[in-house]
Image (cartoon, rainbow over all chains, first blue to last red):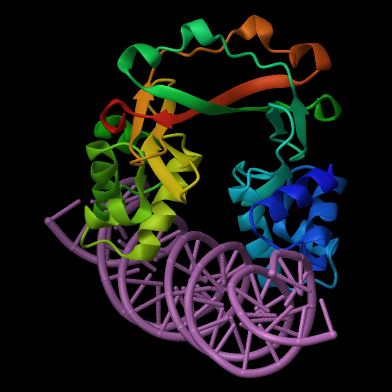
Length: 129
Length: 129
DNA sequence: CTGTAACTGAAAAAAGTTTTCAATTGGCGG
DNA sequence: CCGCCAATTGAAAACTTTTTTCAGTTACAG
């Protein structure tokens, strides 16, 4: 997991510094963390470096930046998945099964070339009901 | 359109001030505008008032706040629709036909009560191809 | 080992948003 | 139609988040 990401960095001509691997380790611990949550797991790494590392990892496709309504969040770009956000407690869960029906996408017909998509489902989680 | 929104405000115990109706008129001119775009259409209205008005209109369900990766955008909450964002020129277009297959939503089974969803499609628009 | 381009961190700047507070005003009751 | 007062506004200040600058440090290719 981390080895692959480190290799990707070096392959791109970037250095694998202790700070960068610390951020990677933090990201591996939990999905969709805020910047401060990530930072809390990297006590030694400067704020600016965390920002810059997240930018770099995003460019390399290792990390994905999310915007779920409450500021920026970051997660390792694993398998294709979507998010379910509880409007009551704010909990974010993931689901892999994509409920998108590609044949219903009316965009191909209008010459829009679909590259990716993101779907967020809002509601109430089991615990909050 | 605007009459309905103004009525909704008064009904909620809020005043229909010239500033608020100016923001509403600005929002009616174009969908998914940034704050500065809205402000440019309301030359006389103070920055803070625009923020507060957008908050109020969101609470009343008249306006929806979007986060499509490049900061906050606002649009009148018309019919259910989704957004197609061109990664090349940044153009945002809308489509009404929702390609979501409800029977595929695996969430009901896991006791998550779906209230709403948002779907964004990224790719290249006809002009950029 | 060594040189150097890449990287880091602190401070400052910039950008975006919210709070404060004194002055103003929409619209209800009279 | 008028006056009152809670709601509203705008300017300044405060706050939060992100980016830039720059001098010193370091990973790693050769």
